[in-house]
Image (cartoon, rainbow, N blue to C red; front, side, top):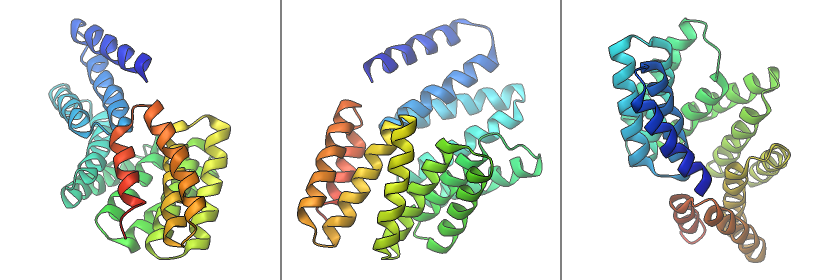
Length: 234
């Protein structure tokens, strides 16, 4: 991801030099998403906060709400799930009320993941089902892949190992077709966790080795550390 990092820095420099608030807010959002993908959550939150400040100042209401959803999910990742859920629920509802459907499938997946991180499995499952149905109905295949992976993680938490493996494989296949390498790495990590719990040591090691290689290649060290915990903790 070295090229992406360099382009992110260049985009930030250009945006800050321009007297165009919308462009600056958009760059904060997109570079923040890049940092979030890598697992650099503190840097992502700083960028999201800066972007939200621009949105408030200039009245970019819809983009502000979208960015607030991503920030809410990031907060859940860093252990502030309850606070993150407040922002997610409020802003998903706000955008729904506006009839604003762009990125809706991804927002629902963020919401489901935040519920899962908070241990609220019923709400996580409901949000995940909505995300999957929405994405499939609209043939948004990338968002569908993320929703499938969320459903797989929920199935792990409900001890439905057969369903979890099937969903991970579906997400992995779709992600492979679309070149979604971060998603693919997450799926391999999930399968490693699943197989280790089932006592399938070799299969677990194989999937973890693939996840580890992909995470390192993409400099996603945070996620590598999380995956290592997931395949060693009982």
